[in-house]
Length: 446
Image (cartoon, rainbow, N blue to C red; front, side):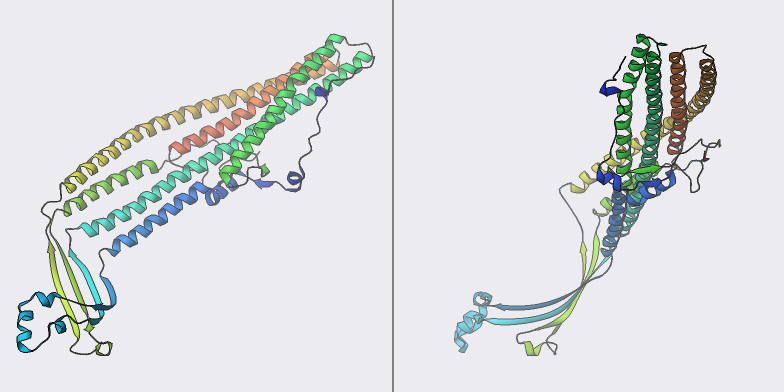
């Protein structure tokens, strides 16, 4: 009897495109992936630029408290008729002066240095500098938050790739076993030691695993694209990731102050300082201004006496009524301060819940990992005994196939449990305000 398996049962030959075949995969371990993300991730670069922006704001704010020196060079040609409206213009004809001589065109050449210096602003300028410094600290805390989010996102994406690859390996193993089972049944069918029903069962098992293999392959590609995006790489960049093994048993790490909470506290301090600036706008201010230079009708007389001119003035400005603008600013600032306070209180509660949840999930992950490991050991022993029984002719090949499928499923659950333990550890460290890994590797290699 000649049996031809349908095309779906034939293993497809996957030939990568020439571009993918020529590009060597980039080898990374988790520490290397985190280091690359720290330097190449677009979100972290944007957060660094925000810190630079705040530093520039400090410089510009300090400039308001420093002397401002300006050099002026001016040429003016004018015809001033104001003398015609004076009493002297009425007397000019009586003394023989033509009226037109009083409004002749004149040229003025001016070179001058102007200096302005704020003297006393009730602490407004110093407080503005303090707020700018606090703004830099707030941006630095925001960067820390972004960095932790990105690093933990990379760690989770790394685990996602390993989980998808592990699932694909298990499914491919099931597929190879099913193909071997189909081949064995066909050989036994030709030898008339198997039935048509055995062939149909074998083919149905293979047909059932093929869609799972295609889906697993798509999941691996998707997971790699996500990780490449976090690392600042092209989505199609091939990666060769190192395994993690089992994490070492360790005590709960000592947490740090969450950068999100510190950032909100810094914002509260900024709003309180801003209230001082608003109050200073309602008080008198003192400025010093001075100028020195030369002004002459002919350029040859510049920089000569007595054409030098100077002026020194001390000015006080006392705001009397600003249309309630300052009152509105204070009300707005008070409302914003209250918003930040409530956000901080809510965030503190969320952090407490996050930490307790992470601790419980870690305990559950440890228990699940232990259970999955024992289950895998049991199914592996059952597979060994099934193979011995099959060799002795005590069970059928279908029974052996089911034992192998159970072992593959247990292997998949064991790997997922290991990666779930890593994920739970990462979640616990994130809840404590820590990066996924310390400066030294804290995992044990397989």
